Image (cartoon, rainbow, N blue to C red; front, top):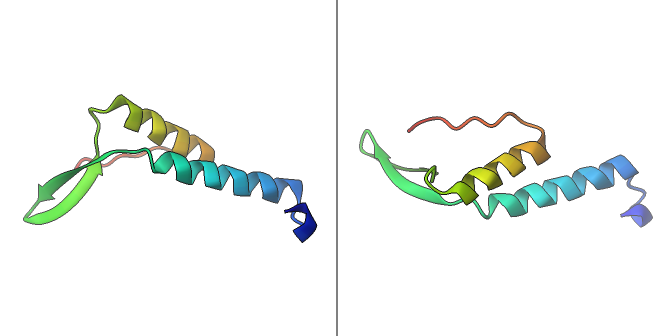
Length: 69
């Protein structure tokens, strides 16, 4: 990336984004139905999903918010 003249900050952002995407892939979801509409939500009974969600939020520097469906 340095050969493409990315700054160190930009390279760090790319790696953080990639890490966040990989952690998102480890989050488990469960199917739910709300008002006759099929939906999904994070499986809150799975501790690993919660840990991965926390890591993802930290890497993206956002506040974790999980609405109840």
